[in-house]
Length: 182
Image: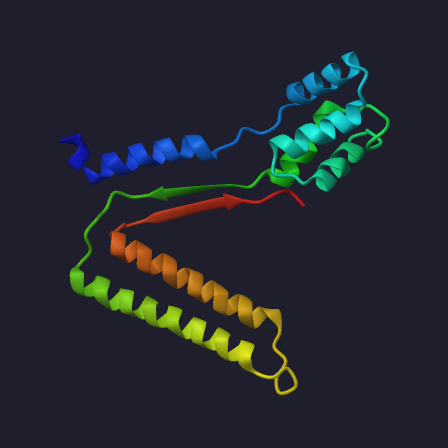
């Protein structure tokens, strides 16, 4: 009967999915191991570290070269980077994270769900309609700044989130997120 309980099914699916998506940050010990291995095989520690970062993180090779260069390695061809600085630099550039906490499903009063769902749907439609209207105007007539599109995008995103919450019937949703350090 556990397979019929939607909360237990959701928790089981969420746990399985989150184990696949989460990637552990690069530790200084990982960088030390790469540097030691490169030195023992007479390779350049900087280029080995750049290749390791480019292969094991979301960093591009150019970003990885910049991180290694900032950590004391002089890029490809010389210098031994500081493992702690490399790990900190990689974490700063790839340290996106977030957490969503959903309450147990609560069936709200059906008429209220329909009314608020319709309000959110109308807001979504109007946001998309106004964004389309702004995009199709000739730039000579009325140049628009990015804030107009940003405001319409935020309105559309909040509307979609509101519709999803109302359809699923959650009483409370907590979203926490963080981005990379600047």
